[in-house]
Image (cartoon, rainbow over all chains, first blue to last red; front, side, top):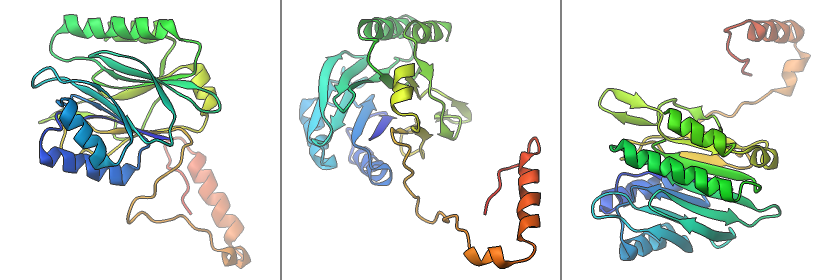
Length: 139
Length: 115
């Protein structure tokens, strides 16, 4: 399985979507995790159709910043665990199930960044027995 | 940075390393490694041949990172395949050339042998 994680700095423009499609063509991922996606529900669904994926989990953008999006193909069995502005956490159901977390450590305000680390710690304290991989922007 | 390392250590998650450019973020002349993958020991055992690649920068000031759980390489356009010609074996000097190349590759600081 190939997982692409990208802090895309906004996917609202046509140019940004073209860049994602170019990366998708080059890297051929089965799962895409995007941070700072700057997308609401409608645009995220539209993007999912453009990349030809079947499922998504979205934490909507707060105005012009933030926003997390995880998309995957139907051949990959993924079950959502939890999500927030800092992470999207799922279980990949394979012969041996494992845990995948797309994580985002917020920039600019140290207080918020330490909040995101507290969340990372809480999150992985809960289900640490599963094989776990987390990929991130801004750690 | 210490808070981040403490959080990782509490979760028993370790940096997965990378292939490609060290820096995943660039703004002007400032470059940093901000994007990465971390995994616990049982994930590493499940996917012992995984690869994590800091991919080519496109549009964003962050590189995409790509994790392949099986370690499969996607050949890039224009990349040369490494090949071995069977008829090289019939050359009298082949043993010496290979031995010299291996010895050079084992020297500290020397590059790997390419055939």
